[in-house]
Amino acid sequence: MALRAVVVGGGIGGIAAAVALARAGIDARVYEQAQQLTEVGAGVSLAPNGLRMLERLGAGEEVRRAGVRYASAQLRLPDGRAVRHEPYQFAMAGQNIGIHRADLLGLLAGQLSPGTVRTGHRCTGFSQDDGSATVCFADGSTATADVVIGADGIHSVLQGFVVAPAEPVFSGVVAYRGLVPRVAEYPAGTIRMWMGEGRHFLVFPVRAGRLLNYVGFVSSDTAVRESWSAPGDPVALAAHFAGWDPLIGQVIAAISGPGGSGFQWGMYDRVPLPRWSSGRLTLLGDAAHPMLPHLGQGVNQALEDAVALATLLGACASPAGVPGTLALYEGLRRDRTARVQLGSRRQGAGYDSSGSQLVDRRWIYEYDAWAEAAALT
Image (cartoon, rainbow, N blue to C red; front, side, top):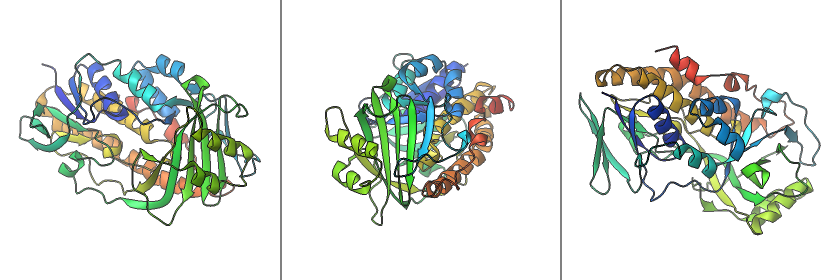
């Protein structure tokens, strides 16, 4: 009889896990608190390690069609002058792809059988015994399975049933982000980061090049709430980057125009968790390893988690073997993601210089999470 899995959280990590589990022959159900599957309007940069997992999930061709492969990856000083760097210190030209988060979520969700995702289910509790695990929801309903996967994000409810929740610490950086229609002067197929003291500005194309995703990172002495969807102020953002390359000004000006959007969020750091699993419950993605965005690895690491976990569970002979399998998953993933978390923190400081502190990302990009998990089965 197939293992039964409950995934709590219908973001990219949770939906990717459900796809991977289904492909491994596991009966998976996803429970999402929102009334419909949605992603805030912003882009994500898919690195070689994440794209490798999307190929495993059968989504590679659709990702290439919906996204934009970068022909050029550039680091610049505030005045627009180029900063010399090695390809593996930023994005990999010809290998990284920019994609709208909603497009990625939609194409993954499209692979699931009808009825797999149950929206309007806010997780409020969890219990387990030797034979099964049960999730409780705010509407009084429950879901019982052989394994429960907490993919419920940075404010994870299920994390509290594994460890004492990690205390978030404001990183001293506020990010403004959103989408604008492509600015004519911006070079097609290019990801570009302008670096300066105390701030940097990132732009890359999504939606087959029709839109530009931007993120302005700004130092702040005042903590801003940790929200993906709080409205941003384009006037304040423009003031932060006044006197920089005029191309940045054109991108910021487009925020207030037709098709533009702007959000801001305070970026909070957390120490790596001491463990991810307890019995039949494990964590995945931001619930397990929330990280600053400076290595562009949040979604990519969640995709690695999803494929690795499903690969190991697919080889689990019976429900009795689930706790041992989750321990194996944690052992495979925790040290790697902790290293990425700490590297992201370090890279945030490195962008505020001439590029001399850029992190070598080859150990991230060259990793194959599926192969590593398969070797343990």
